[in-house]
Amino acid sequence: MSADTVQVEKAKALLLLRPSLGAAYDTLHTQALDDLRSYAASANLLDLAQTLASLHELGFLDHSQVHTIVAPRLAAPTTAPLPPPSAAASITSATPTTAMSSSRALATFDPSSFVTYVTVVLMPPPECWQPIVDIKKNHMNPRIKRPPYPHITLLSPFVRPSEFDRATAVLREAVRDIEPFEVEIPTIELFDNGKSFTLYLDPVVVDRSRADAMQQIYDRLVAAFPSGAQREFTPHIGIAFTRDRAEARRWHQQYSASWQPMRFLVKELYINSRTGQEEPFEVRRVVALGASETAPFFDEKPL
Image (cartoon, rainbow, N blue to C red; front, top):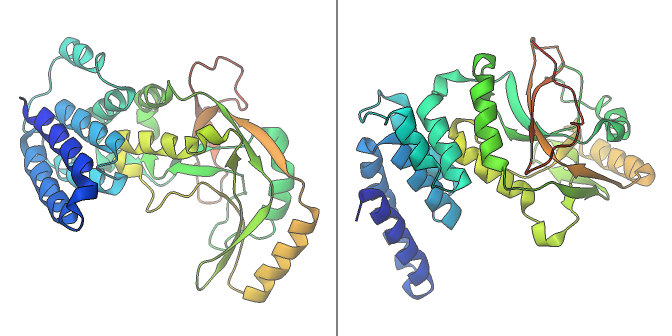
């Protein structure tokens, strides 16, 4: 049995026995993570990517654990040679989508190529923007000077523009079996951050059998690009920011009274970038979900 297969089978066994193990599971899980770090130190990057993707799909690793395990390899010179392109193709053609995207990302994208002026997002179609921007433009975080736009952040930072073509191929591979889905935004929500307050929109997937569709997209992308992971992923569209509790409650009441629920189709991801601190984020690449071949909601704008 190969080393990568051993890691996956070990995880399956622990997950199967978890109800019986009780508190001992945490100890064994920690030991398994230590074993994974040792394995990662010398594993072929393609094999490592496939193994981590499989463990992530099983629910044995979350995205932060994937990042922790793989980060030392990305920061250090490759110790095991990658197979030639023909061999890599034969390996990835037999692996799940997540494994293929992860393999390519780990093999080609160094953490130093990730920059804060590039991001991967979901966005409502243009016809849904106006009521959102009408609120958002008046209540931006004062540190943010660029024009507002409604979006759900998936990956930030992301790779620099010189890597867009390769990154687009990886993203497309990662979501090619996730079909488009409808979301609805019925209400405006208020979040208490402790020292500040955020009004936000909470998109709900209409088909409840696919309630985790956005989380699924995020997990696929993080498995492929761990350096772009969020500290915590909660799909939302921020629309107002304040440090004043009374003001936050007043805004919430005011805007909730006039809010009209909206529904739209999520059918693509966007690589967006800006050219300056006060310049808007623009769509540079559109990545369709699933087998969607319809015209994109937004045109790509060259740099």
